[in-house]
Length: 155
Image 1 (cartoon, helix red, strand yellow):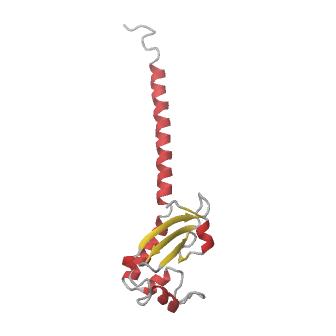
Image 2 (image 1 turned 120 degrees about the vertical axis):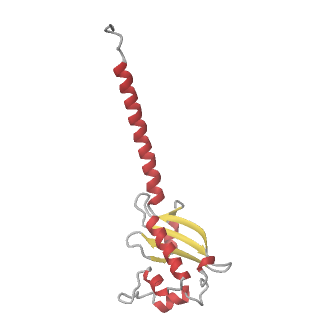
Image 3 (image 1 turned 30 degrees about the vertical axis):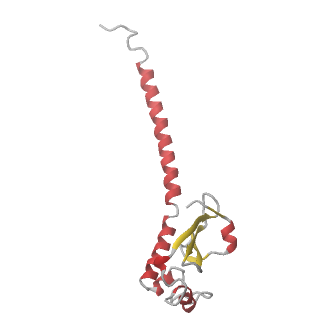
């Protein structure tokens, strides 16, 4: 027969274990969530740039130009298809996109609500291009110089 005080403290040990695992689980979820947020928040924008370079390699310049938000139905006023070909076509300094190397990358805008990403690519020793991907609509463009000053080095 067990005595009255033999089970004294069993409930507290169990409760301490439950509290410890709840706190550790919550911390693990917070850390994992933070890592996932900062690791994946720019994924669609990085994918748009990868798609842009893939289209350039395939010489599908119309589709690549469409990633800049310029289509035949809605042409860009300041960046015509002819101008795009001068910058990215077969006779441009960026004619071989497979040789492009990523020199610098940054996330721009407020810390928790970035406005876009900035990537600087080097195409040989004499030509580099600063590309900007807008967070609002995912369009690609050249990065304005003022935007480069408001960026952080987080990917």
